[in-house]
Image (cartoon, rainbow, N blue to C red; front, side, top):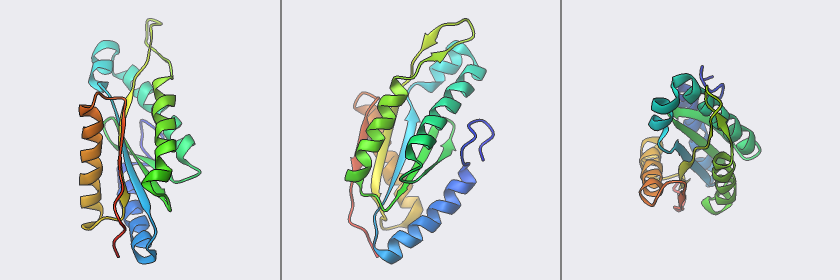
Length: 166
């Protein structure tokens, strides 16, 4: 598990996603992959310090893992990004959950060391797969959707559906 957030780490994410993709491809079932990226997270660290940033990451990871556990699983992808894997879930079916996550995170209060409360938002990109090119291409497409959500103003969810290959 990830030392800061307590959820699954990147190594687990890569290994388990490959397994879930193999199953989805072999059985012709949908799998939606999402990437949650904290908006302007660098500003949180600069303004309040890294310990506060770590607490923000833990809170968001907990919200994400708890709310997604009935449909799939979550793991830390990188710095301020969390991957969400939703087996047997179309993009259309994933959208309400992703929007629930986005709004829950936006509504969570965080407390800085001097007692100041603040909130953060996230941008989420998601793609329904499996897609041609395996996990690497899947991540590229999900990353594009996440960047789209950010470029459209942040605090957004951008989802794309593709026909399953296989």
